[in-house]
Amino acid sequence: MNKSKIFGSMLIIAGTTIGAGMLALPLASSGLGFGVASIIMLLIWSLMTYTALLMIEVHQFAPADATLHTLAYKLLGRKGQLIASFSMMFLFYALCAAYIAGGGEQIHSKLTSWFELDIPMQLGAILFTVLIGTVVAIGTRSVDMINRSLFSLKLIALVLMLFLLLPHVSVDNLVALPVHQGLVLASLPVIFTSFGFHGSIPSIVRYLGKDTKALRWIIVVGSALPLAVYLLWMLASQGVLTQGDLMGSQSLNGFIGSLSRLLHDPMIANTVSIFADLALATSFLGVSLGLYDFIADLLKRSTKPSHRVQVALVTFMPPLGFAMFYPQGFIAALGYAAFALVVLAIFLPVAMVSTQRRQVGLGGYRVRGGALGLGLVTLAGILIMTVQLLQMFDALPAVG
Ligand SMILES: N[C@@H](Cc1ccccc1)C(=O)O
Image 1 (cartoon, rainbow, N blue to C red):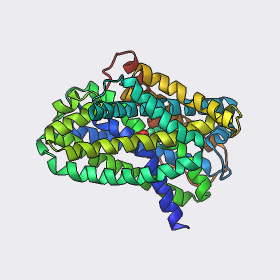
Image 2 (image 1 turned 90 degrees about the vertical axis):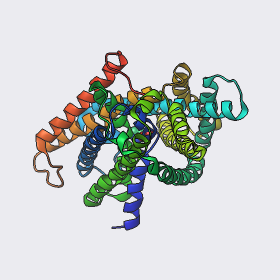
Image 3 (image 1 turned 180 degrees about the horizontal axis):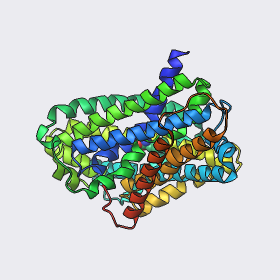
C-alpha cells in the first residue's frame, strides 16, 4: 500500500477536524475545569471515531467513488438521500456563519486597535466574506494555492502558541472542578462540532480505493491527532487562565484579551490572535468551497463568470446575513452546526449500517459493539440534539 497516500489521508482528516472549532473549545468548556473537559473530549472522540468506522463498513460494499448522496440513496432510499443533502447544506451554512462571525470579530478588533477607527462590528464580517468569497469564486485552484500557504503558517503558529503558553500553566488552575453540572451538558454541542470531519470520508475512500484495513488506520490516527492537539490546547488555555477569567471572556477577542492582560507579553497574545485568524481563514476556505460546489451542482450552474457570481451570492449571503444580526454569534453558530452534524455523523451512519447488516450473507469488516454500540451512539446523538434545542429556547445556559 502506498505509504505516502495513507499519511496524506490522515493529514486530510486531521486538517479538516482542527479548524475554527478549536478556538471555541476554551470558551465552550470554560466552567468545567481541565479534568472534566478532557473526559468529555475523550468520549466525543470515541463517538466520532466509532461512527466514522461505521462509514468505512458501509463503503465496503459500494463503488469506490460513492458519495454520501449515493450511499444514502442505495441504503435508505429517496427520503434518506434528501435528509443527507439537507443536513449537509445546513451544516455548511452554519459553519460558514460561525467563521464569518468569528473572522469579522477578529478583523474588527484589528482595524479598531491599529487605526483607531470607530467602525461597526458588521464591517469586519463584510470585509472577511468579500475577501474569502472572491478567492472561492475565482476557483478551486486559487483556493488550493492560498490554502497551502495559510495552512503551513497555521501549523507554525499552532506549535509556537503551545510552546509559548505551556510554561505559564499553573497546576492550581488545572484541578478546578465544574462550577455547576449544567455546564457539562451545555458544552456538548460545540465540542462535538469541533471533532467533526465526516464529510471528507467519501473523498478519502475514492482517493485510496477500498482498502478497508488502511482506511481504518487512517480514521483512527487521523482523528487521534486532533484529540492530542485539543488536549494540549486545553491544558494551555485552562492552565494559564483561571476559571473566573475564562468564564468572563465572552468572545474570542475577550479570550485573547484575557491572555494578554494576564501574561503581559504581547508576543503571546499576538501569536494566539494570528493562529485564530489562520484557523478561521483556512476553515472558511475549505468549507465554503464545499458549499459553493454543492450549490453550483444543485442550481446546475456552469463556470461562466455570471454564473459564478450567482452561485457566490447564494453561498455567501445567508451566512453573512446571520453575522450581520449576530456579530457575536461565533459560538452560537457552531452549536447550530451540531444539529446537522448529529444527523450526518451519527444517525445516517447508524441507519445505513443497520440496513446493510440486515442483508444476509455479507462478510467483510464489521465494527464491534453490535446493536448495543449502535444504540448507545444513537442515544448520545439524541442527547446532543436535545441540549442544543434547550439552549435555543434558553432552558439551558448557552456557552461562550
Ligand atoms: N471540526 C471543524 C468543523 C467541521 C465539522 C464537520 C465537518 C467539517 C468540519 C472545525 O472545528 O472547524
